[in-house]
Length: 145
Image 1 (cartoon, one colour):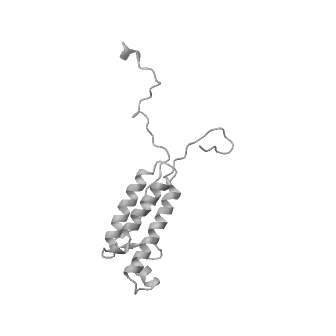
Image 2 (spheres, helix red, strand yellow):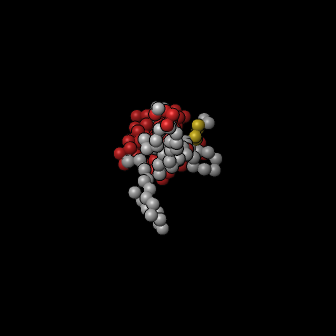
Image 3 (spheres, one colour):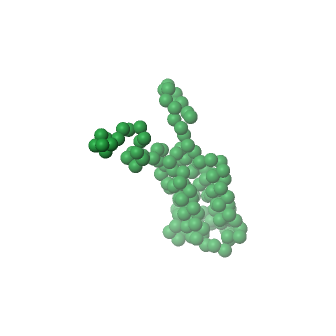
């Protein structure tokens, strides 16, 4: 529970656990291991984007933006090293021209770009509103009859 400065209110900040962060990193590592060098970059990007987007959708109801950025950074480094192993004869500039969008280091190939977990918008609190009835509100008199 955190207490914002100058107030007496407490807030609960939920973040993904270290175990869940490590599990998604393990999945990224398994998909970018050297045994997957036979895949095309397009197939790898589609697979990683789906995995990271699904994981991020689960954890988007919390304070997860920094965690998403860290996981994306890790995945980007793994993809870059995967590309360097797959195309070992290319220089760094040739790799950037061939596999990155013009003017940036965003990895993309055949119309598929690496979006990662940061593509999912973080929603701080899920509005549950009328979906979950409150046990403390009295039932209307007409129904208790």
